[in-house]
Amino acid sequence: MRASKALLWTLSLALVSAAGCGTRAPGANPAATATATPPVAASAEAGAEAVETSYERVIRKVLPSIVQITTGEGLGSGVIYDSAGHIVTNAHVVGTATTFEVTPATGGPARKATLVSAFPAGDLAVIKVDDPSGLVPATFGDSAKLQEGQIVLAMGNPLGLTGSVTQGIVSARGRTVGGQDQGGQAGAVIADAIQTSAAINPGNSGGGLVDLDAHVVGIPTLAASDPEIGGTAPGIGFAIPSNTVTDIAGQIIKNGRVLNSHRAALGVQVGTAAGRDGRPIGAQIGAVQPGGGAEKAGIKPGDVIVSVNGTATPTASALSSVLAELKPGDQCKVELLEPEGGTRTVTVTLGELPA
Image (cartoon, rainbow, N blue to C red; front, side, top):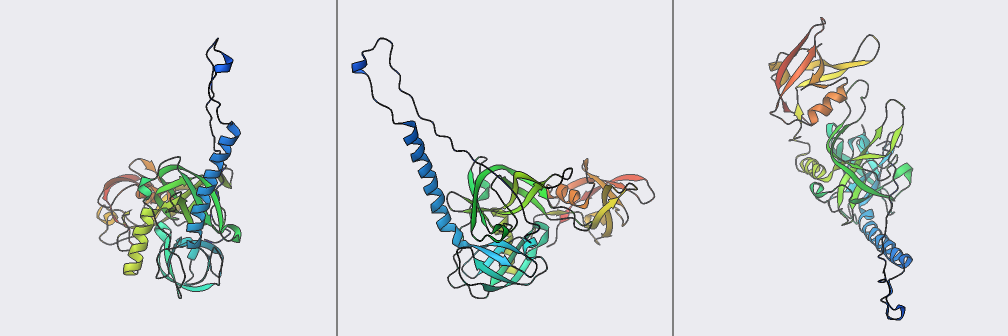
């Protein structure tokens, strides 16, 4: 993404080593005592060296697969997906651009690249370099196997500092998170996101979240922010899980676009509606897809969705976040505020979000 909009996360991870202590039975002969224990300092040093060695091995293997992506408007990061030169990144990194310069994080000349396709609703995109010779594809892991507390490294190009690496842990799994509304329209929503404490800064978007087996398990995408006080929340960032990345990227590479989003949709276009005090009150219907679930349920342009299954939807992004936790074919209760001021609740059978 653009350096001015990218994610921000912070972390300090403490590694604690414990050493056992030998004791002597009361009254025992000091001359016949037991074995000496290794010094605590030596044990801690050996543990630290082992951790450092593990980090160094992972960085040597994966960092050559991380690239910096430059557009006319900013820069971000990407991960080399295959030997044909496909690179996966965030949709907000590519923005409206169709041509790019790609530079390996470990150095080397810039290469020209072009857009294959983007999936803005899931904030993923694939670009392809003209000359893939010498590029090193990353190995993608199974994000379903991640566990809370597992150590991960974030690799990317924060603030244009090429090839930076930070470390943290998997803080939580299965989050549903969304970007802020853009001009009243819903931002991207990430389902099943990985929450991590690894430090991520502007320019890291689209890089790699990597486990200690040197597998890319996620693509860093969003940072938590507090709308009440402004700014980001240190130590809370989110990544798209690798299983989602490989599914969407694979479809784009094979078909030129996403054919199966696996995401539920009402079949409407919405924007955030504001009340008389200027505060958001719901997701207002701008258009209804012919033949979609919303049209069949009697939803019309001008209606405002205020809740789905009892969960409030004060903004377009809030509606997208609720829908991200549902599946195509599910039925849901949609509460509507009518243009005349009345309210009604309808049941909608959800369709699939188009690419």
